[in-house]
Length: 178
Length: 137
Image (tube, rainbow over all chains, first blue to last red; front, side, top):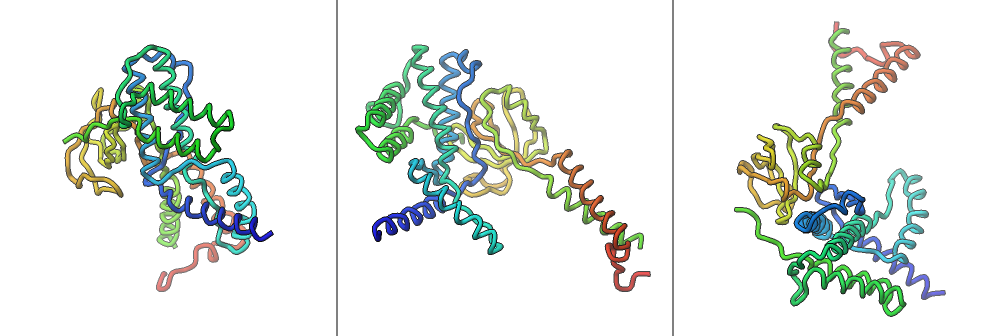
């Protein structure tokens, strides 16, 4: 009985720390999935859309966001189920927010869809910040990681870590304007 | 009495106006979508460009393909000092945040505040709702 209690305490502490490390410096927009009109984009437009979505994703990551596993999410919901009524009754409303998972996951999803569209169109690949890996090869890596998770070869936490690492190195960023 | 009512009204209106300034963040995907935001000269906006630069500036001109403006006091993680002239092409715009006064919520908030004050005045009498100020005639 001792170990589950310790695990729960550790999970709660981890959640609280994750929530604290996520401090949005401005409102983070939740990027939409691709809609039919997006399918009409040509190659330069797709690359521009990737740059934009990647910038939104960078902003979210720069403000401390990270992806959370479904186990973490369940623990957070449970903690909030207990925390919210107690904190309201003590006149100090409080809840554990997510660590930016929702907006980050939406950005990841849009970027992946844009890369898939780029591959379908046969557009020229672009270099990434990952050595010897262009953006279409990076998409292949992302899909492989997802397939490994689907086949049970890696757990969810490992899959999310690998996905985040790949996505973080998607783009070579030009220097700011003088 | 006239001045007291004026003060209460001014405070009520100020409260309502303050509560109706809302901040929205957008991620426009096309130049047309940026134009649809109806940003105009005088608006103060925060943007993040695809060069990963964060900027806060007051818009002085909206051209067909870009915003021109002057930077204001920088927020966290912004590198430019206040007073620099900047141009942000729409195709480099990834995130745009603008704080605006919205007339609809303001009118609603004003109506609710006035109705509440009126209801209290009817039930309790104006002297309770609008207490006499010291030294008032």
